[in-house]
Image (cartoon, rainbow, N blue to C red; front, side, top):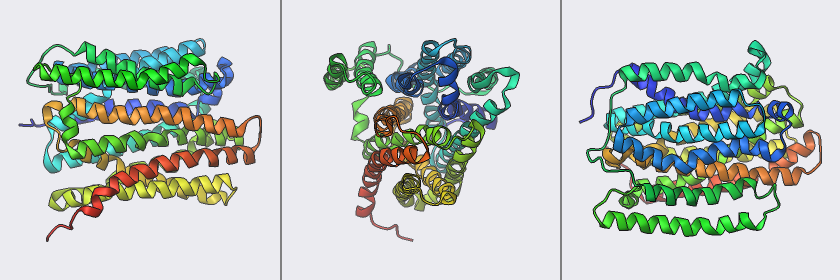
Length: 470
C-alpha cells in the first residue's frame, strides 16, 4: 500500500524533477555569451545542448532500474549529489571542452536523479491522488521552463559577482544542497521487492545503442558525415537488436532484465513511449527561438528570456487548468482526449509561430501563439505520463518512468541535432532578422511534422472509444 507522504517530501521530489529541465532551459539564452567568451564554434554550441540530452538519454533506463533495485531515495540522493557537483564543474569551466564534459556529467547524473521522482510518485500515490500529483509535476515542468528561460537572461543581465553566464550553472548549487540535506530527512524509501544484481550486460548493450545513435546525429552535419559516424548509425540498430535478444534470454532464465519487455504489452505504456519519442522534438524550438531573438533581432539575454516567458506561463497554466477534468471516473475517459487535444493545440501554436516569424507576420501576435503553444504542451505533458504509467505495476515504476523519459530525451537530442542542422544549413552566412526568421520557419516544418505524428498516435484510440455513461 502507498504510504502517506509529507508535503515537504513531495516538494523535495519536485525539486529533483525541476533541476534537470531547468538546466536545459536556463542555458539557452546563455549560449551566445558562452560562445563569445569561450571562443566556441557552432558544433560546440550544439554539444552544450545535445551533450546534456545525450548523456541523459543514454543512461536513463539504467538509472531508473538502479532506483527500483537499490532504493529510489538512495538513487535520488546520489543523482542529486552528482548533478550538483557537475553544475559546479560547468560553472567553473575554463574552455568549451570542460563545459561540454560538465554538461555530459550533468546529463548522466540527471539520468539517475529524474526517474526516481516519477518512480517515487508512482509508488507513493494511487487513484485521484496520483492524477493530482502528476498534474503538479506537469506544472513544475512549466515552472522550470518559465523560470529557466527568464532566469537565464536575468542572471546574465544582473551579472552577480561578475560571474556572467557561469551564474546559470552555479545557481544549481544551493538548490541541490538543500534537496540533499532535506531529502535525507523526509523522503521515504521505495524500491522493488526483488533485489537482484543490476543487469550490467543489458546496460552495456543499451548504452552502446543509444551512444551510436545520438553522437552521429549531434555531430554528423558539422563534420561532413565522415565514414566512422555513418558506421555508428549502422551499429545502432544492431546494438538495439542485441539488447532486446539479451533481455529476452535473461528473462527466460528467470533473471531480472534491465528492461522488462512485458511492459510493452501494456497498451497505454506502449502508446505513451511512441508519443514520448516525438513529444520532445519541440526541444529544438527553445534553442532556435533564442538564437533568432539574440542573433537575428539583436535582443540582449534578458529580453530574450522575456520573449520566451509566455511559453513557460502556458506550460505552467496548462496542467493546472486541465487537472480538474482529469480526475474521477470521467477523467478516465477525458485523459486521452486531453492528451490528444493538448498536442493538437501545440501543433497549431508551433505552426502559427513559424509562419509569423518565417514570413515576417505581425510581431505582436508572436507572444500569443507562443503562449498557446506552451498551454497545449502543459495540458498534454501530465496526460502523457498518466497514459503511459497508470497501468504499470508499482515495482516497475522507476524503469517505466525512465523509458518514457529516455524516449523524450532521445527525441530531444535528435531534434536539436537534426532540426538545428536544418536551421544552420538554411541560414548559411546570411545575417539579419529576415534571414534568421526564414531559417527558423523552414526548420520548424520538421518539428511540426514530428509533433503532428505524436498527436495522431494520441488521437487514434480516442476515435474508437465510446463516451462514458452518466
